[in-house]
Length: 318
Image (cartoon, rainbow, N blue to C red):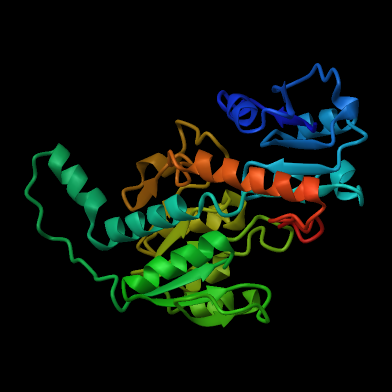
């Protein structure tokens, strides 16, 4: 029998695990302690805050594997975890690919066909035919980050007939279907200059923080849109705000913010060329099923002594 800790507040997850794992013991540790019995736990999963991870780990010396329910792992990379050579961290890369990639296509289509403008016209009962549409077919999308989400964005975009340029650190990895060109991060500004859409899908790490800089944004076309479904701080907020306010680029669709929830008095709410969504691009009723299937397969591997899926390089940050 394996005792598995669920960290954080997940209403149905403990019951789902108990049903799927009748021979194992599931223990829930919510937002804070107490952590009674944590000293014997070897496996944990959840998406807790850094403070909760710190408190739990200080009481769980036998912990050997932790699975995060998120694809990004920046909240997990506290010194106590990074320095533990006997602890494996896995992430939830994969279950979110489909809904996030569909969200990206939705906002690109909305921007290309001026759907937010027509929505505002509808609210005013105004017959507005002055907008000029573009086609996605033949347009260039630059995808910053070619992990599982970025790869799915590339696949869908190529199915629309878009030219897909990928940006990633490692050029020696196998090619991604639908990607016509792959360049290193040092060439981001160069390829962004030719983009009709720049999609931010990279993890937040020391090297990606602020990588979509003012220089990158000023190189982009005035007709281009930026789409961020990754993490807010990957983009220079002040530079992007200026770019959309001054129409240096056509607009931005932002799902991942610098501060969440987005404050009610933020100027971002008022900008007509910004599509605001509250970090929901991953939302889908099927995500829970995929997440559970991933964890159960990894648990099988854990018990069999086999290599785990989605192992995070805690020093690289993804």
